[in-house]
Length: 294
Image 1 (cartoon, one colour):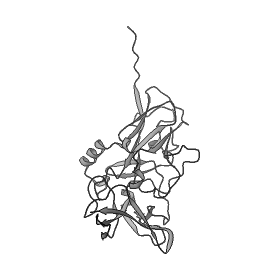
Image 2 (cartoon, helix red, strand yellow):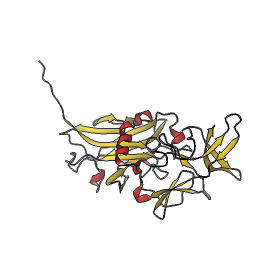
Image 3 (cartoon, one colour):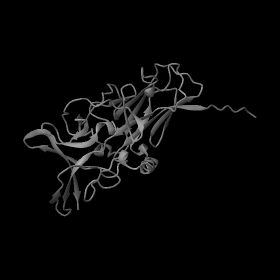
Image 4 (cartoon, one colour):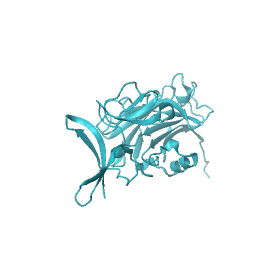
């Protein structure tokens, strides 16, 4: 009878790719839901229907999960402290860019990394985000995220004169993927939206490191990193199904969500967002509109 050899593994890290279109409940953001509701929502969430993740390395064990993916190594493994692991993120859902903020216009793939990620503490725990810190400045294009007076805001049109949606105190909000995240560089395959780059060690910050300076995973629980994708917000415009006549246009944009209804009337479809331009300034997006036929 042949001998059986079993290898015990330890997690190096978990990455959660959390899209708020599938997690928010109407106008109530995922992080503002009661804890039992957040847990229930995560148990039903499966990002594999939305995004595909493809490792670009050999060595650690890679497993896609409903929330994102995990990396693991044999429990006696010693990693090179200079090791870097890249994972490519591509779209699976053909409507993804219709309900996701930040991709109204074509943009190069972004780099999301534990070398440049930032933390927030809310909901009773510390969150490790792979997006970079929001940059100071007014923003320039619709859906840009800006911070003024300690409040996170999102532009509802292109500058100049763009109205801003308040998303709440920046210290209490997730760090969403945003226009300040660095480009991932050239030479990537077509269709890659983002590169998640995990370095074995982030100098001076053990919270973001996968292993200690000895190359071994620490005794503490492995880091859980988050990438947050912001759901798009649009003005809802209601039309007669018979002839397309506009019967009502709501004044302010509401977020697109799978669960709940962020507005007082019927919810729009995820796709079919119209970017209306300013007739006095060609190319300037004046607002994003969802047409609802009734």
